[in-house]
Length: 379
Length: 258
Image (cartoon, helix red, strand yellow):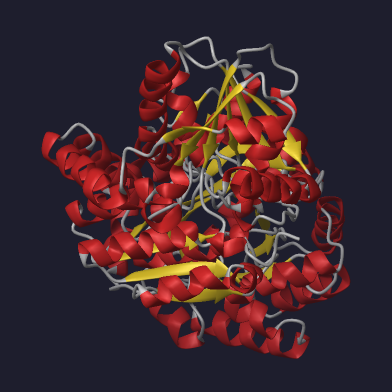
């Protein structure tokens, strides 16, 4: 576990000195607030009345049957039913409240698929702060619905034209903005990436997923699950689900996109302020990732996942764009649930895995978001 | 002379001449290594006292659009770390101006900290600056640099508190790089209590203090040179490179202003 921002050798804080005071201030405020009863009461109240928590844990019989794994109980943790359509609001809301407590007058964020962008724009509207979101040109094009939503919510969206024009580049621009604006601006990172305290802070905000799921599965099944499956881009929905089960005898599987598999194909290095795993060449130049899912199209990953892989507590698999699209269609037709393409990665691997499990095994999949943004791109 | 000695000597000479050291920055390999060699020579001839050379990197967080574009051009031209070291070797073999390297931590890690420092010293570099490495994590670098007589340079930010400034000043063995403004290279905002900030660093160490980020004109140089031991100019040079005459002209004007 992280005590000083480290997960084993991973994590840490690799940023120019200009940002050190801002991160130290953020870390202090976080330490104070996350133990603060009033702050937590306000956040849980909003999670309940505004976000729509607790989200259901749904037994997907028909998915299991359709996948040839009818002997396994497959549960979907329905983060797609959160307000704004994904788990991202759990974190965005927490950070918006934190920003307000810090006296910041502006929020900035990076976004890949746009779900974190929409979530932060939503949270900003709720707390009454102006909001500026950075999004890669490629993602602006392929997730246009979310750009529209952000703008309607009052956020300013800047299209990033540099580099691969996806999440990595949006993150670079958000960090550069913060290098200038840190005195009055809070940078709300959308996943468990970035310099300390972000990976720990975002994990804490997302851990509500696993806490709920654990209680729910115990209630439905009378026992803990055999396996947890979640997609991994930066890794926040996976960490959120896994967190509550770390000390249990439960297998944890993260699913990456085949051509953005930082954990599966990457090597240790430093990107966006943290020591983690990344896709890089021999010189240490960061390589471009590729995924049909904008939220997984990232050559890095959260440092805690790097550590969980290293110590064997979790394992990481990857699936192709084609397998993802097949899973997207399968869940839609069998259960009437259209998943985000990101979440469809988890579905794709989960059904392959389920076929190999013993009868009466129990599996929980995190359905991190809904797929309205992906219509027309899934075929 | 060791790297540390070369850096110290350059500042001493400037101090004797009652001027600040002029430290222009160039991006290695932008658009090719031959151009960098020519530009480095031109800058040295025009009065640069130390030359800072930046290793191109795909994701330079501290850099604004000018240097980002320079690194992108260099990488497009296939600038590898090996190629950068070869270029530095050619530059140092023809010049007596100390060379300082600016390199992202991920490039150092990929090479291996010890190996990177060994190679840097072998090709004649005098000092090393890793802009995304904080003092909390600088031990391994400082040790490896020390073993190879390379000077280290650390940044002091616009809002670094007294405790941090002291540690940074005490850890730097070449000089302290005072970041002038909040922001990335080439642009910046913030009130300028530069004289007080320089004085604060000097209260903790006798190491030279150079100021950089956003210094774009001879007038800027003059203003900074009044209070600091060195002036670092990056984007202003990168913007006009590869025009050798322009680089020479700017270097001359700025050297005059120190």
